[in-house]
Image (tube, rainbow, N blue to C red; front, side, top):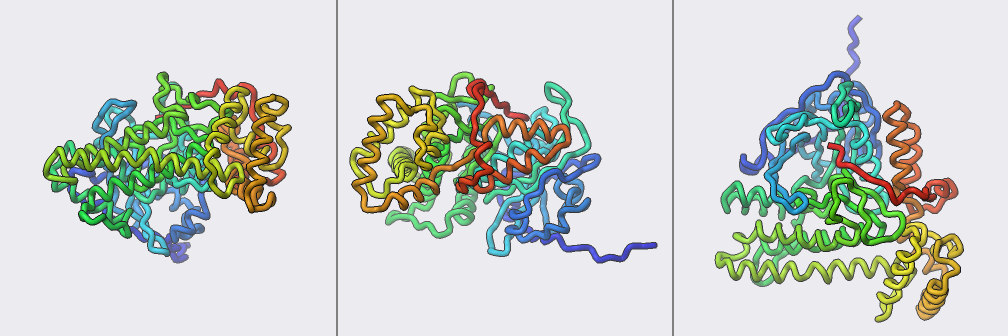
Amino acid sequence: MTDHKPKIDAGWNFDNSYAELPDLMYTRQEPVPVRSPRIIAFNRPLAESLGLNVEALQTDEGAAVFAGNKIPPGADPLAQAYAGHQFGHFTMLGDGRAVLLGEQITPKGKRMDVQLKGSGRTPYSRGGDGRAAIGPMLREYIISEAMHALGIPTTRSLAVVTTGQPVTRERELQGAVLVRVASSHLRVGTFQYARGAGSTDNLRTLADYTLHRHYPEARPGEDGNRYLLLLQEVIKRQAALIAKWQLVGFIHGVMNTDNMTLSGETIDYGPCAFMDAFDPATVFSSIDSQGRYAYGNQPYIAAWNLTRLAEALLPLFHEDEEEAVKLAEDALAQFSGLFHNYWLAGMRAKLGLFQEEEQDEVLIRELLEIMQKQGADFTNTFRALTLNQPERTALVGTAEFDSWYAQWQERLGRQQETEKEAKELMRTSNPAVIPRNHRVEEALEAAEQGDFSVMERLLGVLAKPYAYSPEQEEYASVPEQSCAYRTYCGT
């Protein structure tokens, strides 16, 4: 008997503005089908915000779309071209294992990229197999959603599907595809590519596109230099973003120029991790042997990356190269101050301080120095201060901390806001939980064995990091061996 039930509309509403850019910026490329796709993680709230029908997507047909076996209506799949400085060395790159399906227009009119990561070889694969393993894809799902809950601009994860096919790395692993959602995948490396591989007209077209897509409300100064405006706006967003990373102890791990977006969103969750004991030299990435991307270096690397963006944009700033360089240098000089102001404001909030006093930064840096000296956990120290439980830190009982604590209490007493108001500010500025490295690994190990309940519980706790709920208590603990933790790119 034939089933005549009507097909449910999944709600895809694609537009494909990136495909209207010059051909050198991409290659049309369909995903490579997989053997037997199965959904193992699905982000229902994100799907709903995108205007998608969650029931229609949680089916075999939805799995086929997420794996790349079926192209949804209106999509125009392509692999994007870009370049990048990887650990300081310039390389021509591109989407070697990802395909952009298109841009979903949400019910609120937002334009969001929908990309399949791990969807097979493309012209930019450079010898790679174009595939991804289940662990790194679920890792990106967990961390990106945790970052979103923390209030940090980020790409997000709509779904993860297993492919039914193994991938070979150091050992054989389960294959998987991540469905990534982003305001766009425009990167500093996209402009480096356009500058190196195209004409000035191509570069201008890309800059105009980026301004229209991400900065439609921005207006240039009296000189009307819209391309300098683009650099200035990206600098502002990146200064704010990196400050937010520092305030929660997030270490990206691979801040190459192809991993810095023009939208100001965090992208690429390969060897990332959250710091436990406070130490600016903290590095988790197994490939960052020199500490280039250490926690304390992230603001400096952001400035370095933005300088590479400015270099790519130079022909658009002014026809005279010397004048163009001066304009770029003046813009770049603003980054340090912007970052510092964002960071200082965030640190004041973490300590319940509303107004500004000249000695606030000294107070803040003294605490960080004591934390580093005592090996105190970054997140849990601020959590304990928020809860009025300094005895739960590694600092209690030391003369340095006792002196600092008295100064902090005196500082709090000089502001007009009540203690209750100060504690509320701290609760909204200090997460009770972060994606602890051992918890993430625990979830991934269970998932690789087919048990997704550990990951689901972790995601539930991380979804409300500022809740300070009783069930979060066990997720705040730190194992003694955390200092030896290492992460890998997972390519």
